[in-house]
Image (cartoon, rainbow, N blue to C red; front, side, top):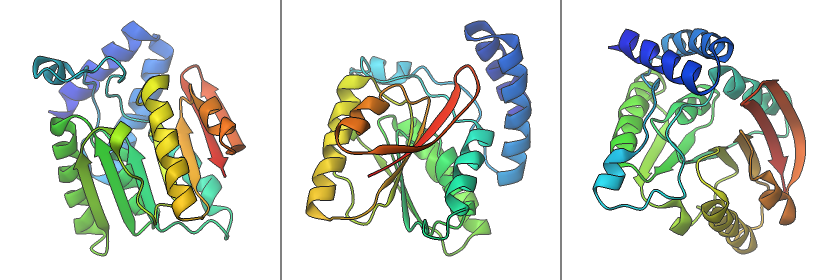
Length: 224
């Protein structure tokens, strides 16, 4: 089953990007899936949502974030003793890869939200497997539209892997601003393929770290 997922994912990336990136990513996929004991590799174009009459105009397809980029982001956070995180929120969580990695990085509470029920259910399965390794983990996965999602008061880290276009992301940023006005605190944003990072800059978030390994493999950390 996993072998088929790897092959299908390889050809998808090779056809849409290039073979060099495909080989690079697949090697990371095999290593990461084995390390964390989860099953998140693959692509979902969300056609099942469209068939149900759900508008997917402003969403992007499901692709998991690079394990290497995820670990690089957490390495930057862990390098600073002042950045001890308590509640990690993944907006557009897909199958829960970032949530599971966050749990292994020692974050005690993780929450994911995704519009697709099939992806949300897969995230729950992967988090249940992660909880077997980390019994103290507190996790929640919500099947809902991120545009209307109220950011919990204790969230101090938000993860995004280019899940929406500018229209939905504007709503998400507004929700973050509303949460900050109600509950003043530090929020760190981990953003992979940050196509709308200017929306965060406009409301006071500053870029504190950036990396770009290859085309499409880019990440930033932004803080308010």
